[in-house]
Image 1 (cartoon, rainbow, N blue to C red):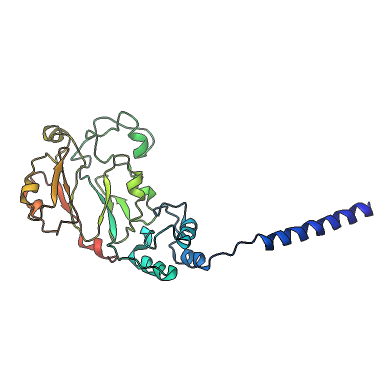
Image 2: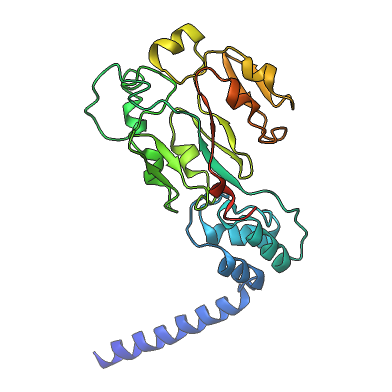
Length: 269
């Protein structure tokens, strides 16, 4: 019995020694920049950078595989901080915030059926395209609100999601979660938005929504910057050209074009 214990003890020492030697021989020196980058990151692991989490992004940034401005949640200030850590240059880019391209609540765009399934937009759209009369509009079940980790979205009294621009970090989680593809990212300084996602003809839109785009093209003709284009029965804004003049807002007969509040810019460009 004593001999067996001694044998096990000696074997343990031997294996321990071998492991120690192997650890020293095959040790990989950690890049100190990885820890510095990770310490600077928000730590929310939202995945907007395209990596599994903040740790994976930090490693990629230290290797040179990820750009210093690759973390949308951190914004321009973090991009400059990471660039300094990594010894790289980065151009300051304007912060982007989420915009909901639908103004058709249940009062403006009523449902065509009663839905009593899982309260999730992705689940509802699998059943005959969802209960809403407009097959392009917001389903109003709040999936986008629930995936937002920054409390930047809420459902208003009309069951439509609204974005708090001063809280939105641009992580794009809501964009990815929307099965209708009606949430987009736009520069924070741009306040004019076409709140419609329908590709139906005007006559069809009128039957299912009182605030939808009817393809009249008045906004296209009125825009002095030629910032509005028309395709697939829907007007779209080129945010790179738009200067917030609001000329299109005044001529839209359906009140489809909306203006986001000034506070959208409060978080900094």
